[in-house]
Length: 211
Ligand SMILES: [Zn+2]
Image 1 (cartoon, rainbow, N blue to C red):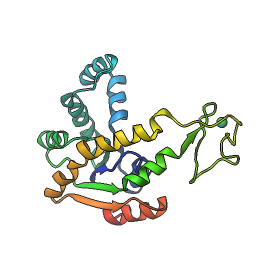
Image 2: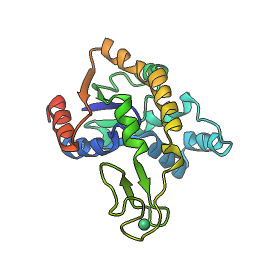
Image 3: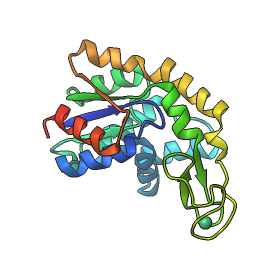
């Protein structure tokens, strides 16, 4: 089963991808991990990517797509994979199809409204000392503002500010969400409601995938 996992940042894709990967016995392939792996293995494309990253530049599509292609033909991908974080644009989705026909069987979209994402992400708190994580409503610390494990004052990560999150949502809606229409036209889109208990969402995803 070759799956591309779509959904806004903060929808919980990472957690759910791990459950799907375990149940379907396929690897999860995230763009970030793939880039780090290619760089560590000093592949030709990895070294090209590293050059861009060292300059603080975005790695161009053709380099990322080449790295994805090299990864998807490895032995552990023979029975399928879950792509997370790629493709990020319709152009990337088209390029993937052109380079590796039938690279995707199912485009699985985890649907979570913006207001839920904003509440989830702006409520996250982190311990700056021991890195323990909390959430003001879903997983509060005992005192509310200090770490249960070490007592340090909890902080909000800079990228969890409401302004940063709204920017990320805007980028998702403008650049990534149109991918859903692309896969829908190919008859490959499956949408699952991503609001509610983690275990209920896992069940709905398994059902959608026939697991
Ligand atoms: Zn702590």
